[in-house]
Image 1 (tube, one colour):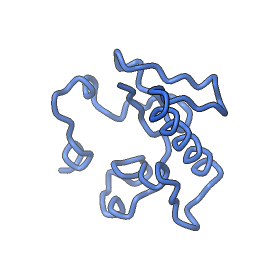
Image 2 (cartoon, one colour):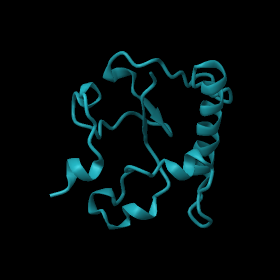
Image 3 (tube, helix red, strand yellow):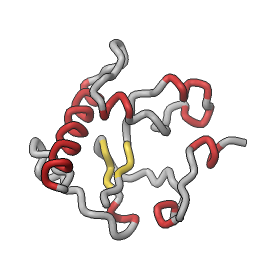
Image 4 (cartoon, helix red, strand yellow):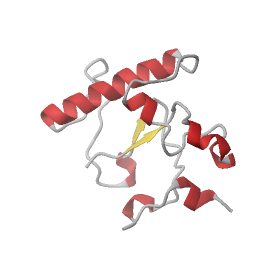
Length: 117
């Protein structure tokens, strides 16, 4: 299993009304990047590059079982063993937006379940 945390996203319309998501990457913000359908006017050089990387990683994962990105071989994504193996998608370092131990839980909550009042 490979676990990644998006460090950048393309804001999804459903998140516009969730105050917690303002300025953060939330649930669904990976959809436009994954399917290379970033709305016109929302594209940046960074989101275009990340969308290309995600497409490459999905392609190599489906073909070879490893999510490689051949344009940047230094960017190695290790199989998940501990939380230290969570991969930062979009560069930078893991921001630990999930509470400690999150990936070891038997059930994952949506962002609105974790952070809404």
